[in-house]
Image (cartoon, rainbow, N blue to C red; front, side, top):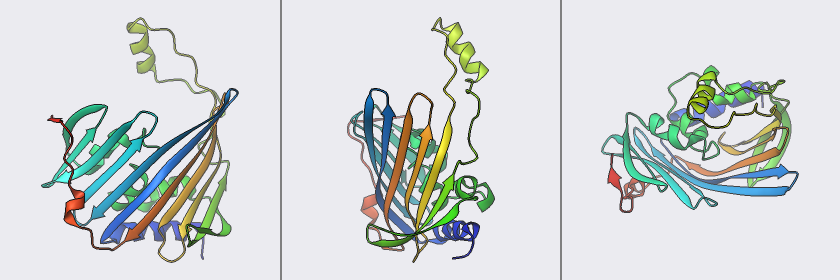
Length: 244
């Protein structure tokens, strides 16, 4: 297999040169608290064809919401059912910033590899998995994969985190209650499963300890590369939406 860095670079190069890409997947987050467990599911879909055809969408089942980012005549557009207004952005990357956090990261991870503008060394793959070790082979949805596993990732925060000063000042100025320090956070482990045949990412999982609760998050991708995509699939007509 070579080193983990070589495998990660292979992933980076594979997504960077593919002619087209399609996936369907889901982020599943399980919150473990003293009051019990709670699960959130965030299904998503990505369509991409070079040079600039793109569509991404995800749904939040608990919030009964949907977020879509797509290209239309060379422009990057976005729409969110909770704020139903079509927005035009300067780039696809800029439009994807909106759903990145609330999508559980699915709006960023694969799209950033397809639309990459930075070298491998500054990618999330290198930042999160450079020190990962080969953890053997597993079959994921019928696909032979290589598993990389990382224990105690480098993003550990040993001390309770403090919110930015400008955030604290805005809350104080608004008359709101003082914000407490956030619980210390530790990424206890993180794993990545890569298809052996084509170096596509098939699964990512991690366990994050927030002190008062623990989150286990798993993202699954069912993907195909270099297939013909019907151009009509890239379009999106928002229901009853104004245009910003």
